[in-house]
Amino acid sequence: MKKKTKDQLITIGSIAVLYLIVQILVKTGNMSSLMQGLLVPMCTYSLVAIGLNLCVGYLGELSIGHAGFMCVGAFAGAFCTKVLQGTIENGTLLFVFALFAGILAAALSGFLIGVPVLRLRGDYLAIVTLAFGEIIKNIINVLYVAKDGNGWHFAISDAKSMSLAEDSVWLINGAKGITKVPRLSGFTAGIILIVIALFVVYNLVNSRSGRAVMAIRDNRIAAESVGINITKYKLMAFTISAAIAGAGGVLYAHNLSTLTATPANFGYNMSIMILVFVVLGGIGSFRGSIIAAVLLTLLPEMLRGLSDYRMLIYSIVLILMMLFNWAPKCIVWRQRLAARFQKKTTKEAV
Image (cartoon, rainbow, N blue to C red; front, top):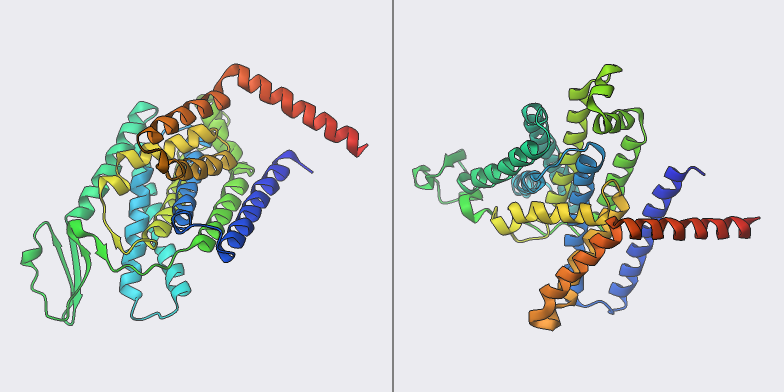
């Protein structure tokens, strides 16, 4: 079996085992309500981390705007749900439509932003994507959309200019966001989306297009000299990365009763947190991104009883994880340990 195939099977198998364990704990009543409430956020952050890792680890471009793509997916999905809520009664089908709407909106945003932005590199790209995340959040906060018997009503900044009938329904209410969003997402939906995202990114990076993307990352000039279309492949990887982040946003939106575009939800700190998941899990390792997202989402809640020392321990764990992943001596030690394990496994098989 090829190493890449084995790696994929290990990742998907680990997710399946984790899913079964969680389901057993929930059904037997051995998981607290607090931990159950963290299941969907863990899936959300894992999805967005997978998308960002495709951009940072394989495309080699630093993006700090994936919270913006997550925001686009969240509001597009929630808006679609509000519009179709009276038409489609089946919750699963409604969530699927919302998911497609969120993914398409985020992918379109990624494409439109990528066309001018991917001409930049390094810190310049990071600053522009950060600006996009802030711009999209502020646009949503001044957008008003309502519907009544007379049709649709739109306004920017001034909601008082809208003449609404008594039967009007707010779809987007400025800074108040979208209210009464049905809770359609769950842990099972999150796991399914993670598996689909892994299937997409693994097939991409192991394909001809994925090798072209990695060639651009390693040496842009050499890749261009052999005829690789730089713009095409960079734009493709960036758009797929944004679409996966949009899927995470849809999952996030349908786990809340009210969706607002606040700095706490989709601000700069959210983008940095997702980037931390990618770096700590290992740049280029999708399995590592998922593990880091799960651990760092659970850790603050598990340490909540320690009061003032909670964030201190959290910071120490971050430092230790960074050293374990990137310190030269730790890398050598891990390689030796892996070689010994492989050698032992080979002897036992013989």
